Image (cartoon, rainbow, N blue to C red; front, top):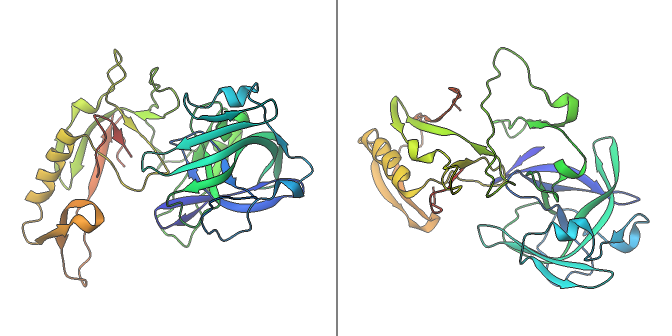
Length: 300
C-alpha cells in the first residue's frame, strides 16, 4: 500500500489481461469496486477506466447469486436474470452505483479467479487519486472473505515515501519485541465491522477515562470501529467534550482560531517554526496504546 492525502491505497488488478490500478484500502466496508466503461458519471482517476469488453474472464452476476444477496438491504437498484444492480453508500454521503460481476483479481504475484466486485458506472464523492475501493471488512462481499484469508495484517508507515505492507494468510503474523495486540470484538448487530474495546484516551499526560465507549452487548450500541478508510477519528459527543477539555487545558499558550471552513470546532494557531508535540493516545483493553460525531459510535 501507499499513503495518499486522506487515504491509504492498495495496488490491485482485475481482468484477463489484467488492468492494474490503485484503490482505497477500507476495513470499514465490504464491497470491492472500480469505475467501469461505459460510465455515466465517473470521477477523474490516474489509470484508465476498467473496460469489461477487454477481459476474457469477466462475467456479470445475476440477482440469484450469493454475492448479490449479500448486498446490504436496500442496496439493490435493479434485478434481472443476468444482472445484479447495486447502490452502495458511505457515511460521508459518497456512493457508487452499478452492477456486480466476477473476474480474476491479482494481488502482487497471486491471481484469484472469480472474485466478485462492483462495476461502478455512476460514482459520486471524494475518492482522491484512487480508481475505486477495496472492502476489507468481515462481510461476504469483502476481499478478505472472498479469498478465504483467515487473517490479514497491515502496517501504515508514517513516512509517506515508504510503502505500507498489507499481508494476507500465513504471512500476516506480526512478531517482534515491539508488537502489541488487543482483541477484535464482534458486534452481532453489526457483524461486518472490526470493533475494539476502548477504555480511555490520553491527551499528553492526561488520562481521559471514557468507559461509555465499551460495546453494549444487549443492543449493540457503543464500541469503537477501526476503519482504514476514514481520515479523522470520530468521537461520541460526551467523549469528545472530555477530550476537548483536556486538550484545551494544555493549549493555553496558543491562540484559538476558527476551523469552521474545515468542519472543525477546535483549532489553534502556532508558529510555523515550532513543531506541535502534544500527543494523543488511545488506551485499549490490553494496555495497547497507539472529530465529527456519529450517534454513540466511536470510529477510528
